[in-house]
Length: 331
Length: 205
Image 1 (cartoon, one colour):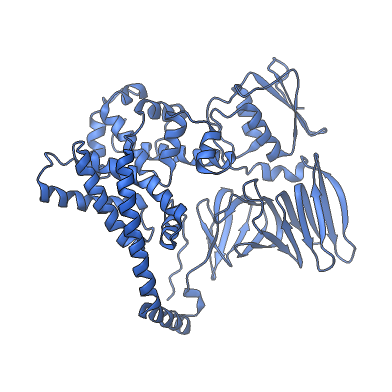
Image 2: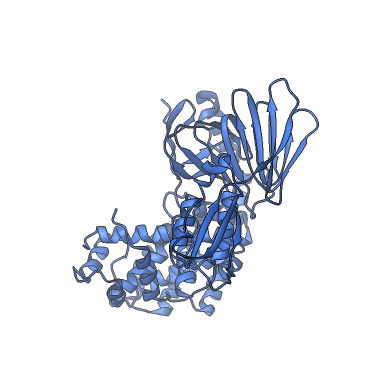
């Protein structure tokens, strides 16, 4: 497909100007008439539903189940794939195929990543569930993901802190309370790494609370035959890299640079340190950039601003300073 | 033999959800439907009726009456706008037959020949978008493409790039977080680019 420049989109839109608005008086008349008609339709449907059609539908479903089994009943959608990288397989009802962005996942579907990774949004939420390479998960229902092996990263986003999503693996259940965390299941251990916020870990005994705050994360480790252990961990180390390489798409045009850097910080775990820079709301990114890989997005954004970003992986900081010939580098 | 088909997410899932909400009597869904589709339908009718505003209102009112009665038949196999436009087309024809007051029926936009006709009005070699938008045909094209984008993508693009609203203002208008607005804007730009690219594929080089 022929593509067009990002700039052309805005030029076209600005050049075309506003569309013809609907006059308010017309809107009012249409609204009155439409609401009245819709209410009448709903009343009729309610009456009908209580009548013969309900009975016929029940009989029809019964016949379907008797002759074909429950597999022919409608599949319950629980999530959609928002991004994909590399090869992944999707299986349900004995059939499998490649998994790509845009696919709808239903309850009971299984996902197996190969050399790639995928990101999904549970239906009707902004929660971001990212599945690492060489992992296998099953979406049990709209709020439960079973991890067979590999890693799952959950970012509940500020807009959906109370969505009751839980990830279960080998008898351990992890429920978030507004957070970013990752659960990893390998042959001999299960790790729950909390980057921000809090999770409740139910492992059959007294539930464990694990928290990440003030730039420190927490790791809860279960190994076979031993009591669990908890450690403080970095929120920017390599364990999180794969997840930041599967960042959500956002529109960066005209985004305040400070807001963009906050987003980078949230995606990568690195703290932002301003050196000889005081950013204000007028310092903005001009243009849309690809944001599916947070570190690359940072590189691209800095290249079109008068600022440079210097990454210190030891300290876990991104130092932002006025651009000079030597400062635009990674340690 | 059981037929198992992998489903691809359609941009109409939100339309289906909106219709379900309306059928439940959810006032937010009904208001959202009116906000999104009333202006689109009005413009759809208006551009086919030589700017006869009173006639367009009649046609849209009749279209909405039928839509309200048949809303339960919407299956999400096409976009809600396409479904409404089909009803509106029939009402336009009925209106013409009844009143005989349309001097000209404009070819429906989403028929391919119109795309081609629009492309023909653009000089072949000039790739400067400023020259394109100077032409009324292209302005109409951009407006209709905006109206045809699924969900509120057209509104989002208009608010951001034409009205100059900030992310925060759009966020307040929609009652969602600024990160969600940025995400939706990215999708809206992509949808617009795709629609525009399809127009290019029809003949413009």
